Length: 631
Image (cartoon, rainbow, N blue to C red; front, side):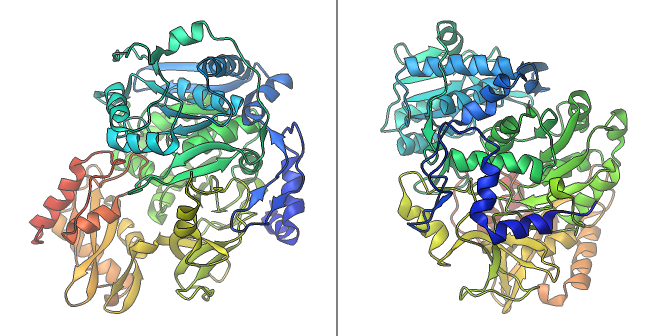
């Protein structure tokens, strides 16, 4: 099949307003827009001003109204608790309308904020959609977030109500959420009117009389309410970016542009049809969960999966294949780190053979760099296309992708392929001018950003300008570094901060990681630049071995050092690869390279609120000490 990507991208370039107006016809409007784009106050661009819409109506009610109420909307699959639930679109509409009514009864109205602090349970999705139904602005905070970090978010968005669960459940432990929430409210200057608590059987939370309300009791007396029309650019949600310091960065998403772009992406990027099952193996606390567990699949009329488990250990490295087979998943979207974990536990892919994956079409990877070795392993074991794509919390959907729904382009390993329609991407040098193909630079998107991109930061326009718009006027600065090749394929090599200077030579740690990760005994790796008195900076690698790997640490280090020398050259000055049991990561799977660098350079650092396992940082420090570094 010949790809329609060149034709579609050219159509967007030729007339962006007409292109997005055509895509906007795929959603229901209470009132159509006055114009497609308001560009009167750049960089504060606004899509579809003058329109009236409702995201919950488009995600739920309209499918019921169209006669598809009996189709499955949401499948909750929790191997961690051994439970499962399935909701049709009619089921989802009814329970969302009732919880929306419960919020209205507690005084929540259009524009009020509601913090949702919950694990991956259906009630989290219901609460998000209920907020959208009445025009309230939800801010989902990843369940289990530290009390002080939650307190800063409470003070920043001043919620009228907080919706929580008594606990989250991890392998072999229960994480009590309510004590963390109680502490956060004590620390915060702002006090919510009410806290709604969904009590899970694994842990019964204590309740504060007069403030706390039981979810079940509240729903028993709740009267359903209809969808409330909101303006196109009214905020749908606030999502705080992980790892922010000082004042949190609350990304603000609108209603209309968000719906238009996400609805298009389900068919254009992912090639999924209404009625098919789509699975984003993430959490609702992250942008992937917002976009591709909750909103995009439901806007498209697909069936979405909410998974409460891990890629390994619940119960084994075959759980993804079980979910795909059992629920007839057409496409899976997950992070490369999930597949590295699966590969580490089952390097031969033996567990794949236990399941029928004949209906599974495509694996999509995003979240951090998809190293070619991981992509090729997945391709070989699954015998399915593996598609890398690139986007950020701020953008809500892919800036660059191999758009499967338009007909796939040839895959180039290490590249998320080409910019999606709506994204004019350039590689800029320090002076803000475009650099030639093959030259690394700052990746920037020419304004205006496409629909669904952040409007601003919550109550912080100046922070929005400083974080994204100041360095390269007329462009959104992504914070990523990379290059285009001669065929226009984009390569994301590292964060801008991860470009290191070795004796005057600027090198991407991502390029070195690609070489290291290709070793057959390595499950995953991270390369950072550390201070060096002679060269300024030198790279050092940390590697995690596959299960059953029999190679000695010193032999592996020598092998990868030599391979980096062969493929990148002596200029890389790569001389050390340390074997560790685990890499420190956020709960969303991103490796904490910045913290690792600060540990190695003996700089001050703070424990990130998003870290999955704090003990992994001591693992890094111990490895450095054992190699003779003064830590």
